[in-house]
Length: 474
Image (tube, rainbow, N blue to C red; front, side, top):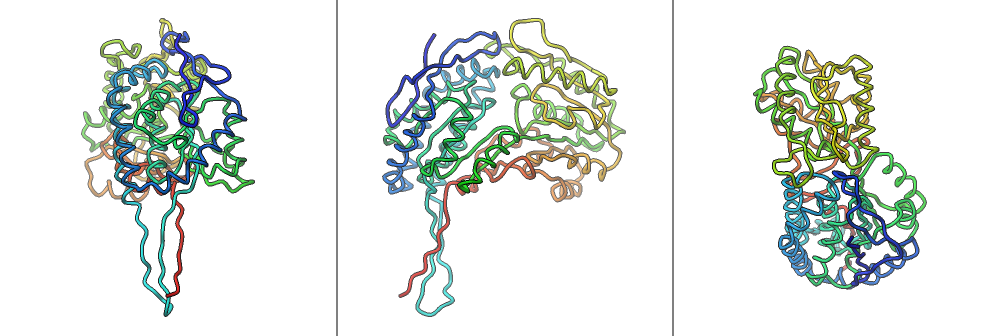
């Protein structure tokens, strides 16, 4: 069983101990990842701080060349990385390959954005002075990534931070560290200067505490649950540590009677079932205008029944296993709760009789508003559906949540599109589009308890830059 090393201060390090990496399709460990303790993390932060001065002085153009070099190495090893993602995460190979491709695109996008991190000259209001606004890198950045898109969501943080001139310490999820371990090899092969990029793995609570308390760590960027995000906010209070937070979602999809039925079904299946429903931007609640409700539920169930379930490398697999036993148990609890409150199972609803953490892709109809799956994020291939009668009611249902990462609507009414854009409380709105987030050049992030700040787009580099006013007497 191969043990993957950490990448610390320009060297690959075995670490003090290891943790097993489990294939969720078999429930069996297949690799090990080196881990370190909090003290060794503190040393990594120190070496990142030492490297920061030289990296910030490197031109944006030259930093971009390093990013392009990482992208080229990742492209060269793309199939290897995709298969690792499939084994550690469970997602079908086609989706894992798409994750690698989008990660490469993130690197290439921010290779250019670093050259466009402009300041400005402010028109003078005082005789004998000139006013400048300049943007400078924040310093050492801790990038804490989740397990559901282990490579892509890591590179959404690493790429803009490096492009901005920051040194980066990446902590992937302990369940899924292997794709990031190979990315560290890509960074090394691209010649990234010693200490500028480091890969660590270890105890989450202790690492979070060190990132928050250590004054040399100047910024934390986190993707994960809102519960953990709240904990980080509390931990950042003592040092007023700046945070970027991409947290949970509870996205609604609104299907209006005037929608193209085929487009709506395709969009809901894509938005709900991608990555086996394990996405913070996934559709979690589906509301359908009553006059189209029955026909839509039938069509959705027919599509969901036809989805092929399998391990990552099974030909044609579209749905993989859930990440672990707790995820599977949680999904089954949500299904049982909905049925207990009056919902009906149209298809699926059971654990599959095979090794691994597999759940039948599920459609629930007539789901009441108080069901757990309508109030809490269901990280699983479970699609709950309920009817609505008016546009105003639909908007109210979509907004009736503490979260606001993404939302979806299917309609051919142009006026309604603009009303929804104005009224739906979400950072991302897909109109007749179940996958609005598969791009590097548009901002990604939420409102309310779905987080702070934006990743990607021209906004994505802002989180890693300080704005400084320079007043010059002449």
